[in-house]
Length: 140
Image (cartoon, rainbow, N blue to C red; front, side, top):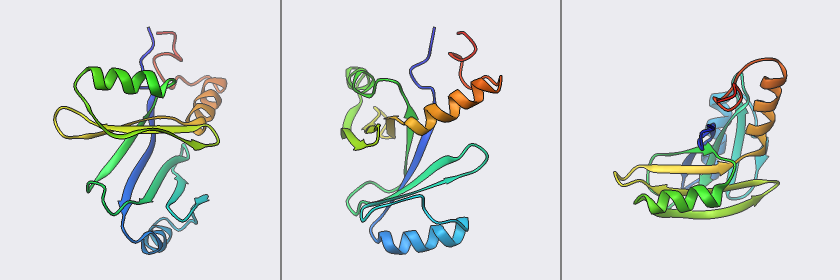
């Protein structure tokens, strides 16, 4: 049996002043963002090129949204709502195969779900190298 939540895909922070956040994170990480728009920046870092994003979201809750990679965002979103989660960000196509949404779980935590082509590429590369990345990759 496969699990819906295959692994962390992206961590997203919020910033009212995205230009200042871009300068700060670029200095901290010592790399430029690979994705840079007026409302969102993203860095790939670490041994597995994991994604750290920052969005211009002055009205969003403080804290972080951890986006779990799922194969079917809409089905997972509907299941989360059926289990008592409340909508925070409806699933949205961000282009290039990235689809994401977020809910507030029944305990007030932000929980993001995302289909992330980069996550899939890294997982497939790991499987090709003979490493198990998820229970599904190991056959169950």
